[in-house]
Length: 431
Image (tube, rainbow, N blue to C red; front, side, top):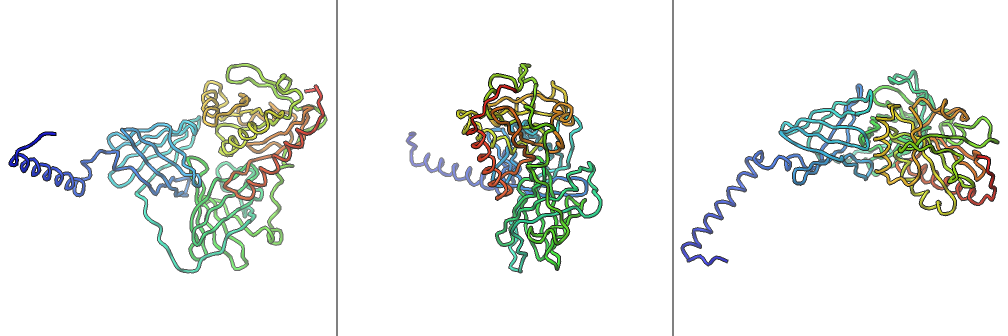
């Protein structure tokens, strides 16, 4: 330590005080002189524009030593970008596992830009974000909306894709704490992710966007206890509590266990596709003989397949030593191996998948590539094969934890089915 003489110590203390005062002055009155990354850190109220629907969602930015990450939220789970930068007020975030890019310009107060899916013919959404503001608390009475509902399309399907699944009845699960509401819609292929929002008076507004599955759910309570629902500012739906749904004219939603079947259940289920190394894997391979096999049909582009992947990995780790095998048949958006292979490799890495993932073809090729199936129409679809290679069960779609009770029920039924098939001593080499 330097021993200043009394006069030197006084001058040094004076200079230090001036320096600290200057730093405080700059921080308060000239924050734009601070490092750029500190200006954008924190929570943001963001939105994407999908058609006529502006869909709000929570977003977070964190930076460290020039590295920037942007986080979506799936319920309480954070979904972070794999790389990012913020230079000259331009933010760019890459989400490798979603094959998407967020690009936005910061004007000192808000971001304006776009969110783009990088795959062939990928959609582009306008993106906007401003600093997060606390939600106002209201003491006025609000809806009691929690519970299980079912909903049906009213009128024509106005969505651009005219998806036939829109005409089927859906399940709606809602949870509530005061004005705060969360939940999910479960279709035959899977759910919407965790919808979040608030009820005010007789209206309910929920939304979801976590890099995929953009949803704006707007509902009003009717005098008869039903909900008048608008979905993404396009389609109209009628929703009623399950106990009242049939009386309100809402058909029963399709049974996931009966949606898809096979032409001849007495025949072994057949598949034959290459893995990422070009090695052909088929149902006749030794690793599948005398084993219980789950054949899952999915794709890296499919949000519900992404929900299902950790569930399948856990099943494999739990039951593999007892004779369970899993094989994933990946039908991809591009249908081009040069483009699809990196996407599948990223998917395998993200979820640490220990079982084979095969390059099966393009999205619309399932009927041609797997002609034994009847009524295929949901990604994902999981086929349960007994030890003799024959189909014992087919389940369409996947209910994630966002659905609450439906997710718990699916997990229980799946494990029960696997336990039963593993206990079956039938071993037939007819695959």
